[in-house]
Length: 311
Ligand SMILES: Cc1cc2nc3c(=O)[nH]c(=O)nc-3n(C[C@H](O)[C@H](O)[C@H](O)COP(=O)(O)OP(=O)(O)OC[C@H]3O[C@@H](n4cnc5c(N)ncnc54)[C@H](O)[C@@H]3O)c2cc1C
Image (cartoon, rainbow, N blue to C red):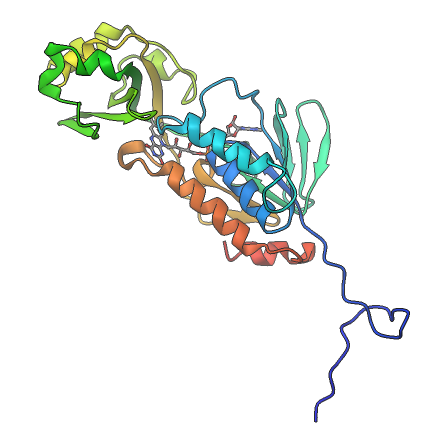
């Protein structure tokens, strides 16, 4: 009959071998957008220690055009809350990562500080430094389209007889489609607000001059006038726009792999998507959840590159 074998390790006081010590991985997440926060939460739940480095102070809107303000706040809570599973993550704001070494899993911040982890998740969005440093130095390219966005109080639309033809009173999403552009209108914040996203050829060169996250107001009426050339339904609503902001739409080449050594890419850094199907945020969430499942507590640091190949 086979005899039970003792686990490896030095003999304890009674002569039995002590079980190997279970150590959490030290995880570094670059970027605290939807992808970074989901990744951090998933890896925290698995029992690992997570530190997130975010370049901004979170004063600007995160994650274009999904009701992301709320989603982002909730994700931030899951990441930092004491009462949740695992150890709360550490979130370091105003911490821009400027260099990254895939072999040693070490990052360097703008202020010269260095941090070393066992695993690095680059969730730093469409302009990803992690991607350009380690995977592909090419910059994102403009598609020629831009998303112009604004928000209106529901009452502004539903109580104006001129807007009745658009009939937004049922609280459902509307998509108005024309050959080279579309307008998507949907309610948010319990139907207090209507969110408008107008995707169309980029109006002006300077709308995209500094990129995706730059929010450049354009003259509200101008959007309506341009749209009127081809679209009549919905025009009354568009004329009400006051504070219109622009996101230039960008694309990147497809990567052969999203992992290298101890580093992987998450969300827009790995696979930016155009917003036509509204799925980039959802995909970033799936990436983060998958990473959490791959690294349960006790994964040895030396196994990280091999496990990452499954990602
Ligand atoms: C107009 C528009 C509409 C959209 N609509 C939808 C929708 O309806 N549904 C949907 O699912 N998706 C939608 N998307 C896509 C969605 O917004 C993105 O896919 C999603 O936000 C990507 O999340 P992310 O965490 O990968 O990147 P981001 O949200 O871009 O987060 C990256 C974070 O990294 C930080 N960062 C960057 N560089 C550094 C650095 N060097 N050091 C430290 N921090 C850094 C940034 O400050 C930022 O906080 C839309 C996109 C656009 C443009």
